[in-house]
Image (cartoon, rainbow, N blue to C red):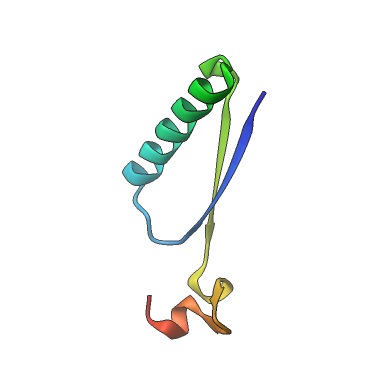
Length: 63
């Protein structure tokens, strides 16, 4: 059973996350030949204060 872990900066809509789950599932089905029902996709929303780029938080960068 393939499991994909996706980390995203908080703020995506439920619809956007559903689209990611669908597309990643389809990619794993195509690439690995796994049955669709066996694919797991886990999305972790990361707070902007907990994501760093270039030594600063995303929040501090205003992203």
